[in-house]
Length: 291
Length: 303
Image (cartoon, rainbow over all chains, first blue to last red):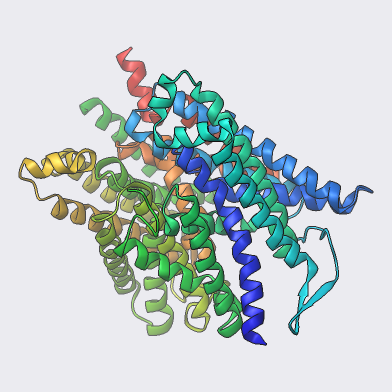
């Protein structure tokens, strides 16, 4: 039953990875920003969800809701305090904006990491699960929470697809990722499109953070590794490509699960990193990359 | 330029005299760390400021130097000078390894591969914990010196040599061609320069000083550890120091390193939260004067 176990666990963790990396690729696609504080946004949501979910009489649901809210707030603060001032700064040459955004978000991520450790705790904690118990899937005892995570992840992915492809606001997002100048000429305020993108980013990252925290646990020390994993998945799939990101998430998720079950859990990150190096050497634009 | 060199000379003379005017060993220790981080940040600046390559893994080169030297000392028992040379060699080979993708990949892709290099090195050290000491670290039997002042002079000497070499290189025709290659590789090639050759040379030089400083740091601290030499946070510190001090200046990154290490020590009584304060100050500096400390000085003079 090991094969089935790997299939089920791999499916859930991959769905979660897809959701976790999606926000990263969305923000890059729409505004060209590589947000190196991404892991910090995920862990902020998870930490708040854990804190509210366990310490108050509020319960797990209120915890999860406040976690997502924390994700949205952190996303807006990241945009308003770090990213927008750099994009608008006249002192920074056009060609070096990218590096300043990287350095700025990196610093902001460090601040959040130390701050979270200071306010909450540095020891790993687990977000209270929304549902408990296990379900028997063809002989494999699977936690109900794991199934919920897979369903929630795919539901969020589906809703995002609908929003981007079927609503006027979503179409503006898509247009901004293809040709921002053209969109401006159509009379759309780019600033508002970016604000919307960061709002959606916050919601996705918030949900992903809370779910990650209830599945793998969370800690401020996980932040650099989470940013690294999201970055890897996104590059593997092709920067800015949503379908590519989902595919790459499944590749990485299954490789990690296989390594964890068959080799050793402590080495789970290594094969995916090696794969990434190979892909970067031979196909730098990723699986479905555009450039 | 002459005026600048004079200021640098005065500061260096003051630093060299520091141990003689009754400063505590603690301050000398802080100054020693500033010298090491100054060398790291200068080496990084050669790659970023001049060759235009964003290396997110300076700690990959530092770590190779540190562990190369540490392993040579702990397992083979070679003399310190030989160990440092071997560590430096390991870092130079690592620099060559990084240069290969850098010549094929652009922007974020190269940044990511340097990040991955650090993660792989970190994993390798933990994986072969039997030889490397794993997460606990590798303690070496030899040290530079038991005397804080002597150690400081070693570090200061390294800073002066690295600074002189890097400044000379950066201000020579080599540095100009490197800048051209970094800003517009195609045009530089059209002008007849072998961009590949210059970039590889820049990587080797950067790796040489990063590795040398990393190797010497091992014999100063008496231990090679992931936390102090390989972790991504070490690389982040180096990058922040370089950008904060003023990129494309070589001297600026040393000022940035002095600020980061100094502020970290001054704010130590605040405990954990001191890291947040230092990062916040650095972030504010980058937002308000993106050309760094040195850029600020230049701007003032021009205005």
